[in-house]
Length: 326
Image (cartoon, rainbow, N blue to C red; front, side, top):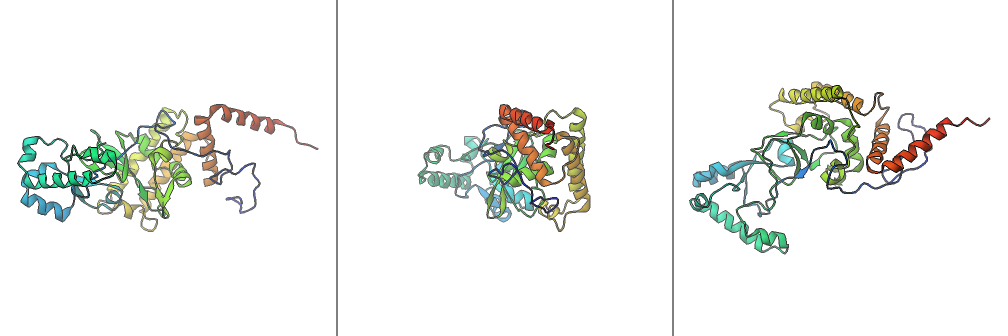
């Protein structure tokens, strides 16, 4: 049935995503299909049985007894903390010197608990990580500020909240990060184009969106050869979105992106950004969501299977050029 008219619509093919497009299944990729896309990585994984992680009250009590650990106590943020503006902390001992660790008896007890927990594991990598019990199991923390993408987000939101985070805040493995992401990248990722792509191919946790760097991000078709002026316009509109968010310092991203409480000014900023992003893809607007995803699937094929995409275009032109039968 046509989304625009509500009438039945006959199509040549319906692919596994229930879209009028060629048959293919989008699989995991280690790198983005587009050279302009910056690298996405998973957050830091502690594998510590919760010993390195503190809420606000636990942190304060611990530092009262172990004041020397203050320099190693870092803000710790995952999808939930980012979206709801919750505060958690972690002991980040990556740069701690042996003599510093020796001077913190309660910290040593935590390290010992982490070691014992890892040794009980049946996974070889976790057991091997018991050799370095003062460190997180997996470390990906960048040396510059980064863009955080929540792994899980409510399906009720029109947009997945994405934003910039300081390099001094440790990101957990419940989120993805793009180190040093530019404004053009941010603009694309919070656009309607990227959101429709995400809704179509991402996994689900219950009904919530489950973002994937290897499936959603690395396969996302970026616009082909946008002009510098078009990119600059996207950057300007993206910065305006960030500026409007700052006008509501007491509101969490959950508040700002709830369809019932989203400020009209923020909605308008996103709509302006969407128009700028659309023009990077093509000059004329998209009629509806179906038109967008069909366009993105076609562009995806051009990036991943250029020969097949070229053949399909040729056939389409030939059919369009044929005279109608009398």
